Image (cartoon, rainbow, N blue to C red; front, side):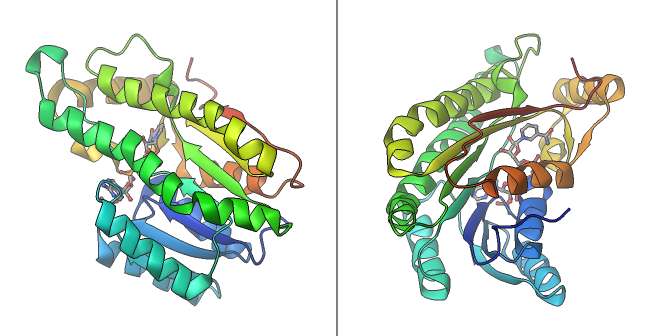
Length: 253
Ligand SMILES: NC(=O)c1ccc[n+]([C@@H]2O[C@H](COP(=O)([O-])OP(=O)(O)OC[C@H]3O[C@@H](n4cnc5c(N)ncnc54)[C@H](OP(=O)(O)O)[C@@H]3O)[C@@H](O)[C@H]2O)c1
C-alpha cells in the first residue's frame, strides 16, 4: 500500500530486528521515512538495513538495549547525528515469558517489566523533546506504542505478568495523551492479536501449548499487516489521532 505524508519523516523503531518491528521499519522506509532501527542483535539489524537500502530506502542500524540507560542514551546520540530531530517513535520491543505464578520466576518478571514497560518509558523519555520540538515546527509527530490484546485477556494462566505489562502500556498510552496531545503530538496504542513472529520462540512447555492451541483456533496476522496499521495511523493529517486500535485475526475472539 502507499501512504502520503511519510516521506521525510524521521522514525525510530524499537525491536526492529524481527517480527512486527522489522516490518514496521521496512514499511516506513518504503514510504520515504528515514528509519533508525533499535534492537540488541546488531547483525540482524544490519541485515534489515541492508535490505531497506537495497530497495532505495534510508535506514540506520543502532544496536541498543531498551533496558539499559547508557545504551539508549548512546543510541539517541547516533540517531541525532545521522538524522536530526525524530518525529515518529514506535515502542515495539517486547518479550513474552509465561510461567505459572508459583514458579516465582523473578528473573522473567524483571525482564518483562524492564523491557515491555520501563523500556517503553525510557525510549519515550529519551525522544519526548524531539517529538514536541518537531510538532512545534509544524511537523507531524507520533508516539506509537505496541501493546497487546493480552492487556485484556483473563483466560490465559501463566501469562499474567506479560498481560499486566501490556495493560500498563495501554493505560500509559492513554494517560500520555494529556501531556502530548495539547502539544500536537499524537499517541497511538496498538493491541495486536496473534501475529506470526519470533516472540513464541522463547516459550517452553505449557506456554508453547497454549499459543499453539490459540493459533490453531484463531489463525495469525502477518507482521506486515501490523506495519500497515502503523503506516496508516501515522500518515493521517496531523490533527487526527487514532488513539487506540485492537487488531485481531478475524477468528480470534
Ligand atoms: N506476536 C504476537 O502475537 C504479538 C501479539 C501482541 C503483541 N505483540 C507485541 O509486539 C511486539 C513485537 O513482538 P514480535 O511479536 O514482533 O516478536 P519478536 O519477533 O520476538 O520481536 C521482538 C523484538 O524486540 C527486540 N527486543 C527484545 N528485547 C529487547 C531489548 N531489551 N532491547 C531492545 N530490543 C529488544 C528483539 O530484538 P533483540 O532480541 O535483537 O533485542 C526483537 O526485534 C512486542 O512488544 C510484543 O509483545 C506481539
